[in-house]
Amino acid sequence: MTTNMAERSRTAETGNAMGSDDIIAGNVSKYTVLPAGYCGQPKKGHLIFDACFESGNLGRVDHITEFEYDLFIRPDTCNPRFRVWFNFTVENVKESQRVIFNVVNFSKTKSLYRDGMAPMVKSTSRPKWQRIPSKNVYYYRCPDHRKNYVMSFAFCFDREDDTYQFAYCYPYTYTRLQHYLDNLQRRNMDYFCRELLGLSVQKRQLDLLTITSPEDKTDLENSVMQKKIKIPKLSLNHVEEAGEVTDYGEEDVELRHSKRQDGRKQSEGTHKSIEAVVARLEKQNGMSLSNTSSPEEAFMETSESINNMDDAVVPRILYEELLRSYQQQQEEMRHIQQELERTRRQLVQQAKKLKEYGALVSEMKELRDLNRRLQDVLLLRLGSGPAIELEKVKPESIEPEPEVQKTFSEEANTSTYYPAPVPVMDKYILENGKVHLGSGIWVDEEKWHQLQVTQGDSKYTKNLAVMIWGTDVLKNRSVTGVATKKKKDAVPKPPLSPHKLSIVRECLYDRIAQETVDETEIAQRLSKVNKYICEKIMDINKSCKNEERRESAKYNLQ
Image 1 (cartoon, one colour):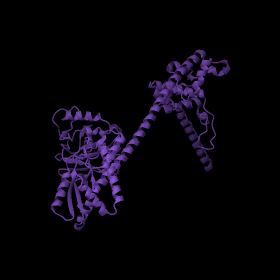
Image 2 (image 1 turned 45 degrees about the horizontal axis):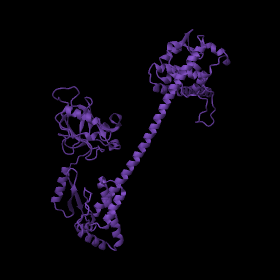
Image 3 (image 1 turned 135 degrees about the vertical axis):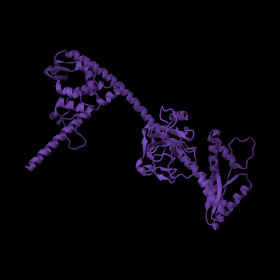
Image 4 (image 1 turned 90 degrees about the horizontal axis):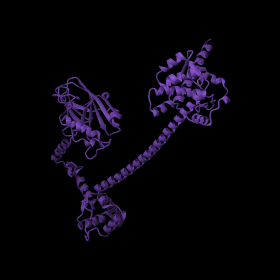
């Protein structure tokens, strides 16, 4: 039995999110849930689940841990999209055994479990249904189960010899309903009438109950008979033999002619027959209302046509219900088509975004190659002299080649900078207790080593910005030099030096390159450099304002 359950589990997991649960063959029957790798006879505490009884529903049980179980319920009959009801028993428990049951494939987005409702429970020693405390019940959407809605509840078994039963709410079985209706029928009450309306898909009775006063009962039957109308007999085979004569007359010829003009296939016979019947009935109903002067004449004409035909007769109420059902199905079909169109547009947008993303990735690779070439050329032109002397050289004394100058301008205009990977020991020069970061920027060696052990990109970038610019410079600067839009009278501050910003990005890139080689992740983390520096500038300004408030408060006190 354990092997069959595992096979059903693997089969159910391969289905889609909507119809995976209809693969469950049936309810579990005295199924013992054993831990993984356990061999031998079940012990006390190895729970036995059963749902093979009337109104029972539990299709599958997965053992997660010693205290947790995932439960899968079967869908409604002929409707695999609806999964709500559960009813099962548990036995072979230990005293004081605590468990958590997760019903993992609910289909409802809104449930009363969110508003305090709780499952029902009873046992053999306590046969009265009781609710589990609502504080032990949780209803949520779980990403581990294909984003289905999950209802979890905790329970503690207190008696070893009891069999516990859990249900969605108070169960009311079909057998109990039939017994109740049989008792009412045996009492022969004048105001109660029970009729067989039809049979369900599972061959169960569908009862029609009429409750009214005895004097109104005869009038009700007469009014129902007067409102009966004719509906042509429907057959599954809609291909008529040549030369067959029908009783529908000219209207039947027009109907077949319109069906030929429609151009649809005869394989859709059932759907078209319903449409034809509804159209015919509406036409006959409108003609009878316009041509007759009184209900009695309409009834007489209908009776004569019934006598001349071999057709089925149904009450008008059923016809109206059929018409409403047909209209509802058409409305649902329109909604489904609108949803499909909306989904198609979303997929088209996602495809466009993926195409743009691929173009950006290729552009990023090209920019990295150009940056690497630029650095190689600059290193060759600078030579091995100390980089701090570059500040003393005039700009016109070093004129890069046209190709290099063009590449540099392209790099400066891009929003994201991707430096080439260079070994850390070769890139940073130690001299006289200081570390050279490039472009004539030197920092203290001790602070640089403390910076390397800093956790997180945000803290690393903020501390590095303070080391390069200092708090006095940062509080009077901005990253872009553009005034904020949050304040109307905001004055733009001078921007930070672009070459120093590039040094910050290079240092952060060297740090990230030691952790990962994924270019997408590196680009994403480097794009947040400006954000981190802006946050640091805001923190410095906020601390300065707080300090000014404290000094003004001291001055007022004095």
